[in-house]
Length: 449
Image (cartoon, rainbow, N blue to C red; front, top):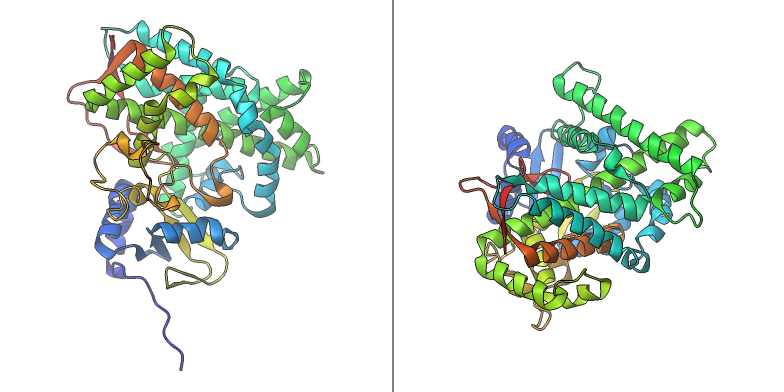
């Protein structure tokens, strides 16, 4: 006698329309409500798709690490390929492995640590820009942080100056908007239609292609020795392609993905941290005291990072509440069982760090901002996969070390000299795009210490 396979609970198919509406307008509430209503395993039917949402650390470990070979990139990333191409974020299989092998050496901890002085220089430029706005009108901190992270990315990974490309931020906005639109519409709207969104996307895509071609042409004309930057390594890797058009497309896809993911996640993390610190004056004061004690009035150096204990606690707690990678989607290659529930081949599977980081079984008072959760002197009894700000398994974010270095340096240098205050009455709303960013910018005023 065969036993029926267990199927996770979930909303009835009659709710498809309301779920599609929430998928477009309120994705975080959709995920949070599903977890609160149905538990750690949820089956959601949306249109022609059936989604399996798993929200327990053991589930995440199985899907992202133990049986990761059975799970390729899923909903959202698949559709986003039309906007981003086959870069490291969206590719799978042999292509992804080749891409990872190509750029992994550039992100090695030893090499990134050797870039500390460059990161500090870019952070000092940001602090200087903010200083000019002291006691003045509001400044969009996210815009300033994006300039900082693009500056770091250009100098540390590409060995290139991105300041010359003023349109890059606007173009990335349009391309990312298109990537999310592709997810919401299941990739069913042709990009050639004369809609405003589609026109903006085509213009932005052409602009990013122009920027990539300019960066590559400069590097071919001025090769580096040793060639340990991303552009040089991609030129070498794609030169093995028999078709120059394929080589050019690979170069474009990989560089655009790196530029997008490399600057936005860190800018968003620091933005969320500054917002949370402003809401908690006692945290702001302790950050300031640590920065003064560790850095004094001198230029920071690499060795300071391990002494900025509280700064790193604040950043980790900010990433718990607002993880840069807010959702991880996969597609099951073959039938599987997760947490005792059957997952059919071809199913879309989701793990959501945003909800996992608020799971009441693993986090006391989960909505509270409390950096002491990450005090290295206190015992940590949480499961490893209860905290996933950079994903997990083979596809763990390759740039996490660089991002944390950037964030720690810039937060400590800002905290040493000034206080950032949110404009009164401004409502901060999370926007779950490819990363979890602040919607519409973060207007703050700058005040000298």
